[in-house]
Length: 269
Image (tube, rainbow, N blue to C red; front, side, top):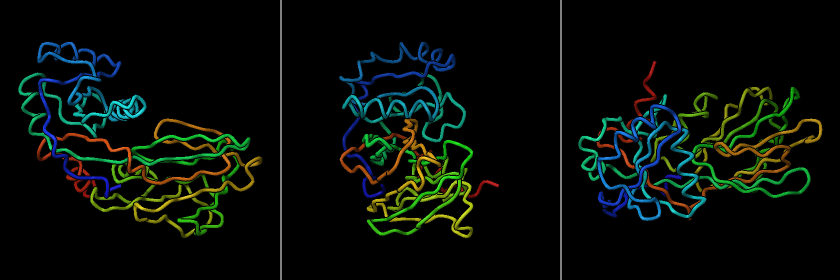
């Protein structure tokens, strides 16, 4: 993922900004307060988009831009709970200057291809992680391969996930996976409540890796795959790799960039 990350040399035209707001009351009130900040334009005419809400709405907005093929730099203002992908909301004052001075961070999502038990093929992208999860009380059994070589013949547990550096402080961290610096050029492969192998705690892989998962005993032990917030059930095989042709840019205030947040998160006690 990090090979797709870096500064974006294009200047942001702060006269052509779009506005997207979460359906929450706080975000709607903030959107109303920002209406007079500038002459907002539709997303398909914008040089950048201001996103009001939390991390979940930011992910929704990025996915929507990918789906609509209208990807522009996104500057988030936190009106949610965590706001790891967002900047501090300060109202209308100085908003255009903040965006003009923002630090760009270019990210590439994971591309997931899943084959279900009936042979249907499903593709989706994930900015944070792709996770495989057991659907029933039965323990999932998953074979894991990296670049075509079987590395774990049978992982028994609740599931497994593959995380980008951006997503390493989300579900991956909750599953006791490693926090990845944004320039690490790595992916985190993390088991979820593993039972066997008992001592395997996951792996850190180069971001050029293709990771494949094959479900063992899929009829008895059904597994679902989730790419960020999109879920497909009863999968048989899943392949994941970086989508280097799908760049997106996040904008952060100087001193509050995501790389600094990732470093700081490792010292939270």
